[in-house]
Image (tube, rainbow, N blue to C red; front, side, top):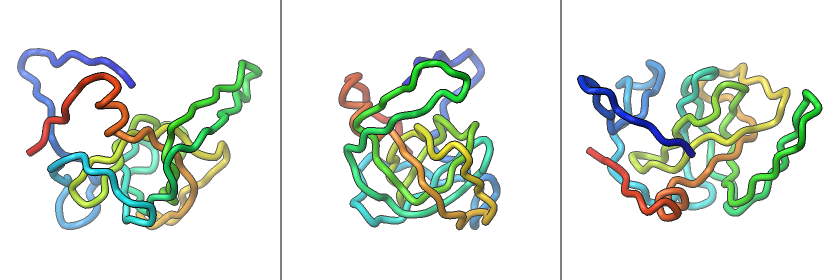
Length: 142
């Protein structure tokens, strides 16, 4: 989770970029209703672009290994999915239909997303409804 400021002359967009995939380049965000396990899900990431899969389960605990010898990091409360991610995708938006789902937390270290939009893999995301509730925030929507 992060904090940001919006410089004058800029604005926050209430849409998720699809990296040129599909009929439009963005998907308008209409709400933050949590998708059920098995529901279709896509994510926007700086490394892999737009990749899609399905929601796995909620309330997972994941241990991220530091390959540089630093301490391992344990993160709980994450959702799993079959959406493929690679390093650099962290923080990218997950969306199901037009409902915001969360932000990329991570995936397997050596995962390769070579199949484009339909690359299947494993990933974990921080559910957005949990983060909004924890920080007392509301989501801007179209």
